[in-house]
Image (cartoon, rainbow, N blue to C red; front, side, top):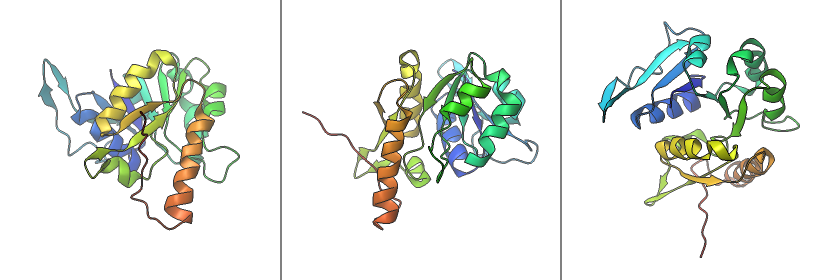
Length: 206
């Protein structure tokens, strides 16, 4: 499972390095790969019989070598990215981790469908502050990551979410609006209620 993370800021860097540490070959897609340092603290290492690690490449090259592409760019850059690279996403799983805060919807499902109609769409890694992606454990318990994806891609999402240290919570296919309800709840508690960004969710059941 080869992963491309498009975007090398805090969210993209945190996710990509976690994937690489868990043994998933990961390429960061960057406009300036020669100067980008997102992959520098993850050297190539032996994990079982595979060689894995993180590298940095142009966006086009990162997408070309990937089975899964994570969109971790600022929301206002998503449409431009998809316009330029939508055809190259055909047959790949696109994980939308970008939030269009203040827009009619936070997700980019419609943009992916418009510019990359042959891609599969998932919504994940968008419902918690980045601090909780970097440190997902609360008193010994892993926080939950709610996500939506095609049923055939559920196993892959579970592996990537687990790689970050979170507990996968599958909501079904086409449920990006439900996932974004968790995002709104997080903002209501963490920001509007002033409880702070180190806040996450855990599902309990009997």
